[in-house]
Length: 139
Image (cartoon, rainbow, N blue to C red; front, top):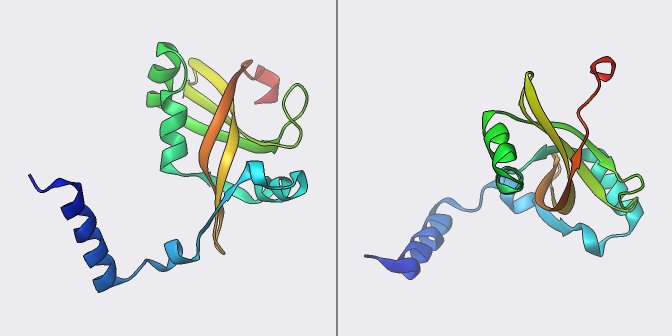
């Protein structure tokens, strides 16, 4: 087997040949814990997507029911700053798992953002909390 060093060398070689993709070169990771609440609020307002790592973290969080439902469908409903009892200085992602007949909602605290000129993404999530289902008139 080639081992990790060989794979790393191949990646370095590929990056030398082809360069760093422009989007990756212009992206910047930001830890929300090191930002002022106003900066977190501005990023939260601009957030428009959840990166694969955060999505994978969301799916694997929770019990067997959540795992089953989130594998069926996982929809981001909103990005929002916390309201009590959640921390008002943190950004959260509201997510619905499952289909219309059987759903579950959770809210995930955003730990890290990835910011580029094109968009702001949620990269890593932290704690999560169950939410009540949306009422029929709120849909």
